[in-house]
Length: 259
Image 1 (cartoon, one colour):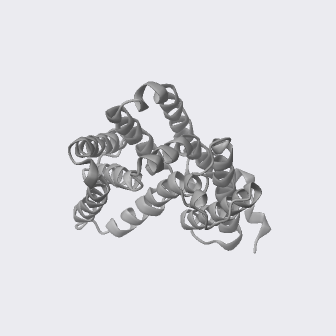
Image 2 (tube, one colour):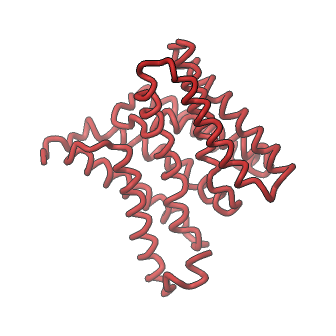
Image 3 (tube, helix red, strand yellow):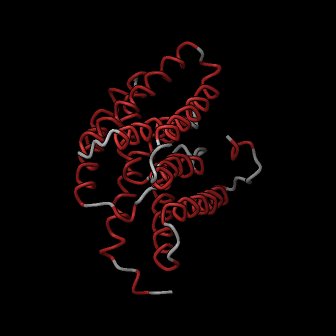
């Protein structure tokens, strides 16, 4: 273990990235769970990733071109799923899962002739949170602020919710990767779903503990940061969720704890 690895200049930017992701994903995660479309973010994230890979294959090196392609791909996926939600609401979860698989396979096919395709796909899934730049953080913070301003008017309508979701997920995927986007959205929200009061603070606390724990473990063990944060988020959600239920006197197996 190298305590020198706990360098604030190294761990500070990824922690800020995690806090930015949590700021938008906490309310989005709760909305996704209450609507029963748990895998929506995974599907939209994969569509955004498909856009990133398409830009990579086309040799569009400009950051704005990659961002635009990723957002258009995510928006197209969101539009498709919003239409499916209106037409076949009872089949929406199955359609979301199917969309994720198709988008993932399309991304793999695009990278078939790329000698570094496996590495590119791995980076997209697990992310490169340790190497986020200050310019990335600034652009993402501005985008999330815009999302915050549009939150109330757009989330009142199904199409607006899907569009806002696509915009948020596009920024998050390029910042922390597909797996960490899903974990940040679902795990903290799942642990506090039965809370009606102060749920935002409790969910945010779980997310912060998960990111801090994962970053510290990664720095001390030299293991991949993204997967460690995902595991840390799961443990944080489990422990804090259990602690909150005990404080309320709600047994873990009671109907209130399951809903």
